[in-house]
Amino acid sequence: MNDTVHFQARGRTVVGCTLLVIALGASVTACIGDDNPLSAAPYDAAGQISFNGPTDVGKKADPNEPLEVVAEGADGRITDVTAMDATGRYVAGELSADGARWHSTSPLAANARYTVRVSTENGDGAPGRKVLTLETGKPSAKKTLNVVFGPEAGAYGVGQPITAELSQPVRDRAERAVVERALKVDSTPAVEGAWYWVDDKKLHYRPREYWPAHATVQVRSALDGIKIGERMWGGTAKPLKITTNDRVVAVTDAAAHTLTVYRDGKEIRKIPVTTGKPGFETRNGVKVVLGKEPFVRMRSSTVGIAEGSSESYDLPVYFATRVTWSGEYVHAAPWSVGSQGSANVSHGCVGMSNANAKWFFGEFQEGDLVEVVNSGGKTMESFGNGFGDWNLDWTKWRTGSALTGGTGSASTSQEAARLRPTAV
Image (cartoon, rainbow, N blue to C red; front, top):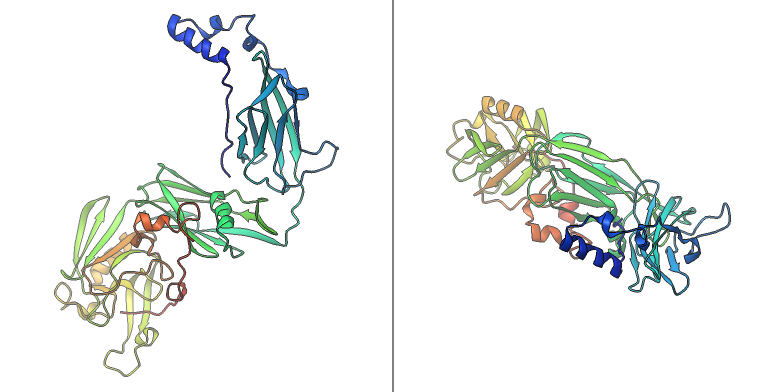
């Protein structure tokens, strides 16, 4: 929810005091003397304002209705209003130019208790204060939208996107905007980032560039009790906290048959490799490590190669670092050592010696980055086959936001599929 919009008093007395302090070097105390209305304690503004909250004991406000505060009489005006619920969520609002009326512009939460602080001034410029409270009732909704954040709490590489899985589909752009505003991501150090609507029930969040090394990222939802759309209200979400490790990136040059590993920008190892041969080219682009498997049995039938054909295989594979759900790994390939560093002979994976694969397996963790360049293959899918998020430039990424871009949907039948065959 957006922060409350504040409108401060613009009385002549305040401006005059500021000018005197600058010109004479006088203190604020000297400027505001006992006969100045600003020196007095704020008066009780109860008789100067009214609001549309319930006045009967035990009666609760309808969260569907906006909150409104109105100045009564002709000798005073509202100068500022803040409304906040018990969880610390502010209500955004607008104050009319003449100070006669303030109204909320963001929805109230259901089942919430609000404290509303109103500041006023009378015709002489003296300040008034009034604190109001109200409670909102239960929503008459049939649908509750809960959120599950990912990945699990822990330490990850700097390429790890944040995910948000919704319990209900959200298709309307205005409703998506309500959801997106309430999904908060804070990092230390702070970075620019944005959500992307992958489909009606899933969002990804990433920074403009990779996360800083050794950052702390905290994710939470402010949707609980908030009206999203007709008969749909926000529900619960468990907050998430992750940290990032060193910046670890592997760049595989398919044309040069090498994989170079960088830690925090410094080259630490160059490894001879083999990548996908013609017809089975390794995907170009940036991929995020999804997990590590000490042993995988790889069968050609899982990637559509018929058993008994000249391309079929059934192999035990060790030190396998997964980068796509469809079966692309960086792994040990002792059968192709003679070609590593000189030719591409695999069915799409990046193969290396047992010793190098064991070292790679130990150095890389979930969220670390593996980039392939100069391959004849297609570019890694943006979504649905792992995390190809970084293959969208920042301008295109922003189009996936309901707040800054277009419809925000990137779902295709190809990218929605989460097949898990294996290749070698």
